[in-house]
Length: 442
Image 1 (spheres, rainbow, N blue to C red):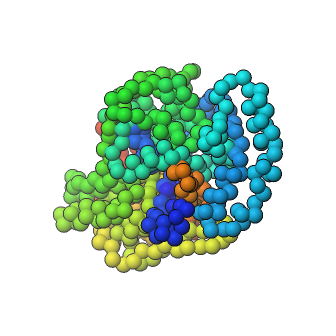
Image 2: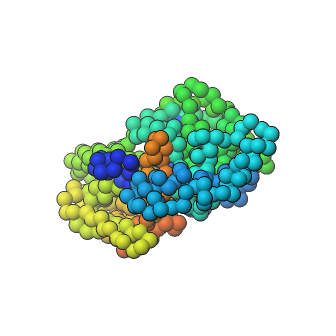
Image 3: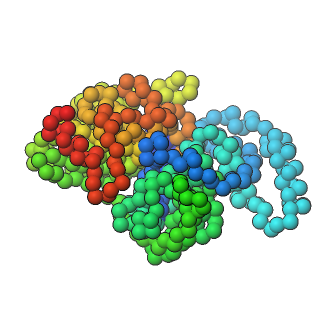
């Protein structure tokens, strides 16, 4: 879903499938909650734009095999309804060098691990994607796709951390869950997980890497971690556990301030659950409301619009534009139950995609104050193409813009009041500042 992009899900079932498929906006960063915790498409993201461990040296990545056009061409035709794919040059004519090289490898390569069949297809697809500058275009194997579907259940088995794929295509931890196996093992935000049980993760797609990090509850794996400032990688043994992720958390704080947090937008009932929580809070007549979108990776596009609608009167929520200039406008109506209460929205570097859509709309429309740190900055749109064997090809096809036509891709949304979170898990200066703002108006 998700930097926030809208993901259109399509499949070969065509019209009927299009009626039942949903649009997602999320970042390709998973919640390794219960397994890496989870593997959830709860995205993680660098803590702000600056915590990406660019200075950390990652082992050299070997380029994957190039991809036979045969795998990609039928999918384009099947998902887009475009007949251009039918006229594309057949693979045996357009990829002569590829097949020539593969023949040589088959004939002369000493090892016995040369990819064939589906493995060859998948490696070739990954090879095509590996050469792209956009890390959000990705290939998801059938196994990883099943894990993603499992994530939607809200219960996962893993180490308990939010992660993202950095520019080097290494798995980067953005936040660890309190009390999780990852925290108990000493893992920190910014750490790069480069191996699991001696098997390299670097260079693969996010979902593929997460799938290797996940495992059954109680299983033990050895993780190789690169940490900025350390001379060599660290090795830690972690026992995986099951972790439940709450979608909505709400409570009344001191001084009669209401608080509600949303962890992601990937349930069809997200807006309804949030509305119910806010309704309960409003019945207690709070002086103001804090809406916490920190570390929220995104989810369904329709849910981001519906959530924004809870706080906004009639108007624009976002614009979506393709590279040919085609534009679609998404709007809120005038029925939201929380349109008038004083509002503060908490954001950080883990707020992405749909979370950025909501935060950007609230900021541009002057509805509330954003407090925290600059958001992740995912303003691209991915279309999910379901391939015939259950795998997925996620392709960036468009970008979205805030009501004031701000493009946040690669930039993020800056808060109105910048407050760093800090390292002490027992202290939350961002939340404290939000309470102060609601009580004093400054």
